Image 1 (tube, rainbow, N blue to C red):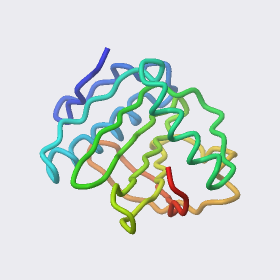
Image 2 (cartoon, rainbow, N blue to C red):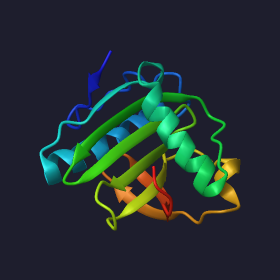
Image 3 (spheres, rainbow, N blue to C red):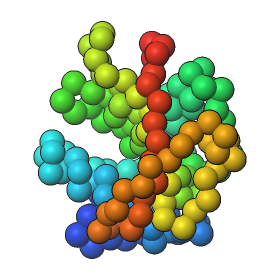
Length: 154
């Protein structure tokens, strides 16, 4: 069942199995606030099992671009188009959030972003490859993030 993320009253709905559910909910709310403020887009998520095509698309990009397989269980996903970009998010039980920003037109920006919820360790599958910068958020505490540019066509 879809859930519209409320960034004013942060809720752990859908994220309860995570050991860092509170900060993961803050991270999710932070993303919802960004898309509402920048694009007037309402950020709605659904259980990962309800949108296997979104999860498969993200997993394919990770595997083909960097040979990455995420070990944590995906809890929620969302996929939408905004301002010429196809966006996809996956929120994992570990507290990891992965987003794909894929420019629809040839030559536009395409990247995968990783964000770590406050209180989680860097996942082993990312630790040796990526450096994470820190960013403070009123909703999510300290967010650590990294990214890579997508080179292939998906």
